[in-house]
Each structure stands twice: as C-alpha cells, then as structure tokens.
Length: 201
Image (cartoon, rainbow, N blue to C red; front, side, top):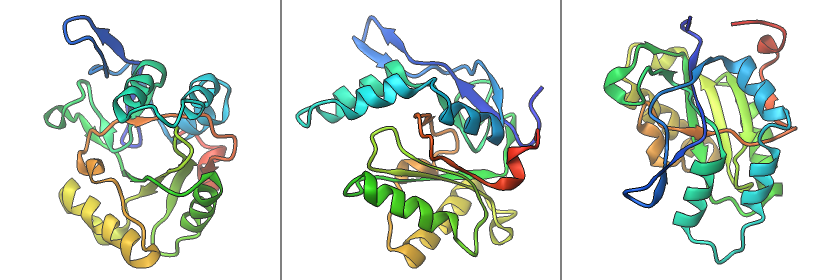
C-alpha cells in the first residue's frame, strides 16, 4: 500500500503498432520510495540502457533518443502516486518535486552542478543524480516550508525561480506537469539524503 512518501513506478514503454512508435505506460507496476529509487539507480539494472543511450551517435535525432528512452528505461513520477498517469488521477501527492536541468556542457559539468545543488541551504535535497543522457541533472527535493499550501505548478515555479536566482540554471518547463515521467538511469554516484539511507519510508 502506498504511503504519503511513496510515488508511482512504471515499467519500460510499449510499442504502439498503429502509431509505429514507442509510448510510455499509463499504469504503474507498483509504488516506490526515495530509498527504493536510490537502490535502483546505483544497481546494475539500468546500466545497459544508460550506456546505450550515451553511445548513440551525435547525429541521432531527439525523436530517436526519445524512443530509445521509452523502450529501455523504467521511470517514476516523483510528485505523487498515480493509479493512472494523468494529473486528474492523483491518488496521493508526495512531498517531492523534481527539477530537470538539461543541456549542460559535459558529464564533468553535470557532476559539478550535482555537488553544488546538494549543498543548497534553502532546500533539502532528497536525491540528486546525473540524467540518462549524461549531460543533465535530476534534482529531487523535499517541498520547503515556503511552498506549503500552494498548488503544484506554483510550487514548481517557486523552485524553478530559486534555481535560476541562486545558480543561473534553467529547469526543463515540462517538469511543471505533476505526473511528469522521470527516467531512471544507472548512476553509482547518485546522492541520497543520509536520513533516507537506513530508513524505510
């Protein structure tokens, strides 16, 4: 049974024969928590998919990369548990928001940004890891007190503005969708807040 600290976990995408493309699953396979995602990311489960995506040629299109991710990566919706992945079907909101920082110059830069965000003094980081493509960062944070009581999009915009003001970084605007999919890569250097490491949420 999902708790307030759980969110939805979805399997790899399926191929839509009519459209001739890969599509994301709408129904989750189970609920998961921060500790579960951390254990998944540092395991070998997504290593092959992660290395495959990063090895794609520079000529690969955004659509080709998108289809590869849909076909090969499992994903979560950090901001809530959804029996069906639709904003209107949210059964339970979680206390987390994920900001997605894309198009960094390199893996080295992504690691620098990751370390910097984990030291933020105004927002408590739950998880922080390098994105599947290797040139982005997923920053999963606990909703701070100054966002409590607001609708999700308002919370997201406040945190986006925080990122821009303090770090000069831009969050992917698609993240303002409460049921936005976050693909789970392999990242042995994923950061987890120490309070979650030996605790079942």
